Length: 90
Image 1 (cartoon, rainbow, N blue to C red):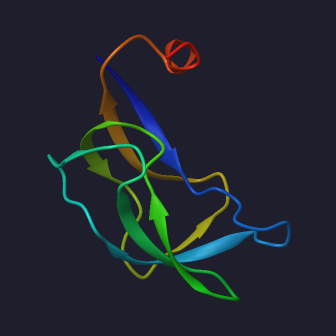
Image 2: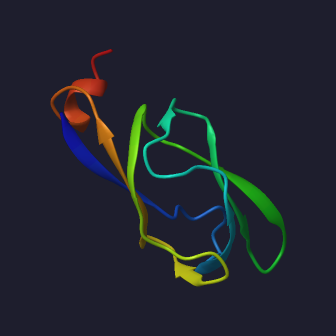
């Protein structure tokens, strides 16, 4: 078991930050890759943010209503298996 950071991805070339509107998960929730974990607002649109991992949420770092920069950690998730390299061969 290892932990991974869920970071804010760039949804467009111009995007540099987004507002975290609401969390759709809580600490301890088991989630699957592709599950909606939060709703974010960019300068153009509100959208759902999907999890890039299967696992269990262990920490919500960004607060609702806060601005988050692209590449900044939003949450921490506990994942099964080795590391990201392992998932390349699934």
